[in-house]
Image (cartoon, rainbow, N blue to C red; front, side, top):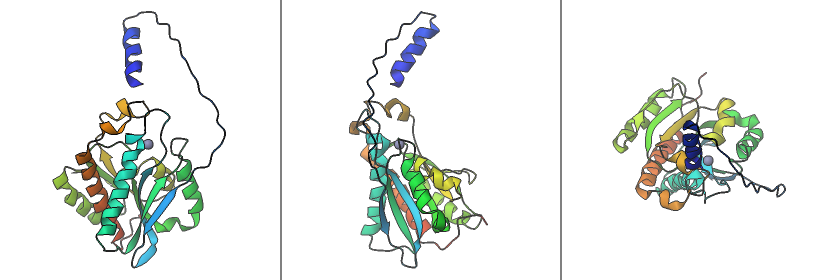
Amino acid sequence: SNPDADQLERIHARGETMRVSLNLQPKALGEVESGNVIVDIRGSESPDEVVIIGGHLDSWDLGTGAIDDGAGVAIATAAAKLILDSGKRPKRSIRLILWGAEEAGLLGGFAYLERHKKDLDKQIIGSESDFGAGRIWQLTSQVSAEAQPLVNKIAELLVPIGVAPGSNDAPGAGPDLTPLVKAGMPSLRLHQDGNDYFDLHHTADDTLDKINPHDLDQNVAAFAVFAWLAADSGLSFKAP
Ligand SMILES: [Zn+2]
């Protein structure tokens, strides 16, 4: 874990000789099948155009994967449910993707890109939650000039819950969307406070007691605002 690494660094800095004994017990257990779980809230006017939100289902061996990425799955799913429960339907579809096999190398993200190479222009914009369960403090994006006013509106709506507007010069929407963003999909990122993220992620300490439900609520609200406004617009987010 990181605290162990910090301790080694301190011993090293004192100039002491270190002897480290590692007990490694990895095993190859063979290939297994994974998958992306995809749920669409069908749009009322352009259902084939999708706004993507999500998190990843798999986790690291240690801990339970509460912050990486159970929180992201919960946040995106709850945002989609809020919109479903409203009874209203946006013009475009909102696609909730619970990604498979992220930790093994974004395999779900690459598989999705492979399947949607022919309709990349229908992947309107995306944002994934995969940096723990802390409050969102900033929004950044990479969208067309045409869509900038809408992103400004999203940012304005999120100011009261503590989200600062950020630059439109920041491609990136979370790990699983990296293949799509590299292929040209516009992106928006809701940056979480990750000050404790690397103390917990991929360690035995990644457990549910680290998650503050009130912070999750703030995340859900931000994702619901983004997903609804992006999906209910007819704007082209992609720069010409
Ligand atoms: Zn993750």
